[in-house]
Length: 304
Image 1 (cartoon, rainbow, N blue to C red):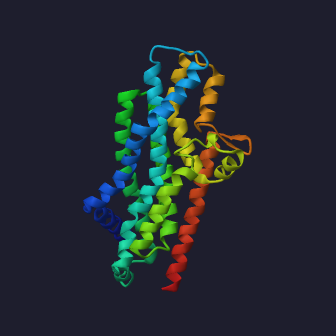
Image 2 (cartoon, rainbow, N blue to C red):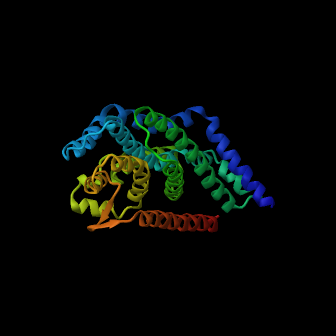
Image 3 (cartoon, rainbow, N blue to C red):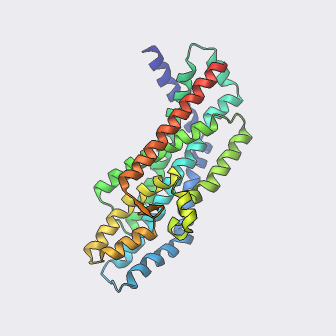
């Protein structure tokens, strides 16, 4: 019970320290918002034209076509931003742990009657809460945008999007915890955050559909769990739009073609990966990262 109170106090302290620095929180929120603005202003037309071409080439015309296409493009872009930000923000919001190392605050904790494992778990849980708060803010802004251009997301899909976000944030937080366990300087943190921010989106197919890559590269990216974190979000963000197109008489073949082209359907070595398998891969990756994180914590504690 005493250790539990210490744990809650540490989580509260780490979370408050992060949000107390308004500039840090703003910078964490700014990165996904910049992506949202860039997508909405520069790349939106590319995807709108792609969705429209897929329908007009098959001679499908209906009343709310423009609104549905605009919303579908926005939903696709938002799934990319949320999926990528769940990882990149987790790396940025782990700043408190690095600062405690730099300022020797961590050493003060280690000589106090607090177990080292409690400290490590508190950093992880606090990072999860902070990342979740930032992603929810991004989602709120993104959903306001979708409501303006064309909202076709059902209540069930909206609920599953929250579940997807929790899975993605858990993956990002564990990933950040494992990698940043070896970082102890501000420069090291900046380098890691820059590397992850610049590469992760491309490696998981968030910025460009994986279907546009070569077969070999598609198979390589299909081996990465981050690809499936984007995949589950794609399915639930686009699900309502696909259903609306089906209601307008769009054929199953065309709908499957759209899902194939925009990564709602993912393939590995020519075999389609079911949605349940995507969850399994992502949860399995979280399990492996958790084992790695616990192992690192135990080994570090033995050295002290």
